[in-house]
Length: 103
Length: 509
Image 1 (cartoon, rainbow over the protein chains, first blue to last red):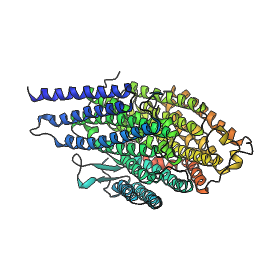
Image 2: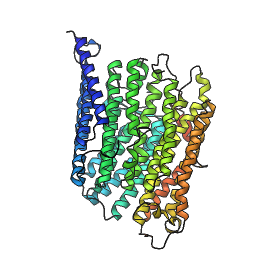
Image 3: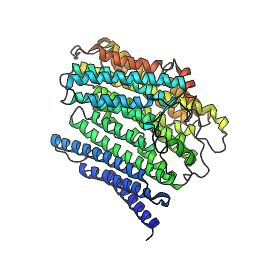
Image 4: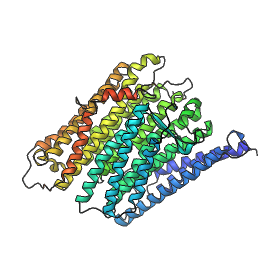
């Protein structure tokens, strides 16, 4: 299997992950499921960034997308932690665990 | 574009608020307020000095760490960024003094209310970063800083409705920024650069660019609460502490709009089509009508103001179709109306920022005085709180677009551009929006003039709160006084005034 094909497999996988996550954001009602759905979207984006490191058939992997992925993961982790903390607090205060009313 | 002189000011605009934001964390509640206020004053001073330097030089740039693009990150303080930074500083300093007075005078505040200061200064740094960044990934980081601190501010009150709205806001923000980041990844994969200036030279029409454009536009629209992705805004902005509502409605949503405008005008021209502009314009027109109609049907003052934000943001979207040239139009002919359309975008942003923050601050005063913000709280407001009633009147007139307010100038320029470009179909939406806005503004004013029953509560309100609301309302009026100077400053540098020329190979129909 040559390099170009590997690259395309990664990209296809990232598109599938992104779409799955996006669908989950719209369809899931439970707090935790929706938070996980955004994480799956994020995984798709990061996978595409990692695979773009093989641009232009360079001899070595392009470090710029790797730096972006590291930054992106840090941001995504803190956002997810914040979302989980909020969801837990809502559950403690009201006992609710999903978006029942709308959207 | 990069021929501006290098200067330290753009870096300070981000570094100073971040330093103070981190510094305030080390203090207890009282010290946090003083250090937070000091940070606000310092950031405002830096903003004023930086804008003065930008006016003198025509614009400033800063290479972070001395690295030049494409390796390093460029901060660019051009006239458009300077105007947005000025708007943030003026709104920010007024809201900061309001917040200091509000947090000190209220005794039923939640436990973490003094966290307002670090979160707000972080938000300020993020906003300045958004306005200055000339780099797609740096913009992503700024967007995230703004998003997370905005949600942090939104849940400060700690009440379940605010937490619920905050969680929904956070999930929309994460989804939007992931969508934006996917677009960034595609562009980087295709062109190998993140610098906006280099990218605008390299970008070619094609499926990749169009897909990136769609992802980034939808992501930013969700974060700006542009119709039809606006559903999270009214509950989030309606259930917060008053200074927070003012900041979120006036400033945070404008940040994503600014990036959208920049990207469409500077980078994506080749992939845009006349039809794409019409589509986004229709979203804007629908937002104006739907948002104003919803505002008319609300019972609580804060919800009226929050729905009005959805409507007023719609006007900003209506600028896009006017900037994109119809097939076969010469650029020279179009300069008649593109300049008006850009002026409308900037003035609508400024007047809405000042008017909307003033309304939310005034609503905060009313909640303190009457204990709630239902319709009865407004009765006899003119006699009980003349200053606040005056602020609501001024801000409302600016939102409606009656002369001689800033809002009038923005809507007049929008109408002028619509007629001059031959796209007359936007004019009815602009006018209908103004009529509906007049409807809810006059409904508020009618209640304010109506006699109330004597048992309406009228608790004392610190004078500073009312002054801050009035100051911002007056600002939304008087921004038209320096209009000529502001516009000639803006016109000195692209992209202001330039048309978006659609490329040959746009894939959208």
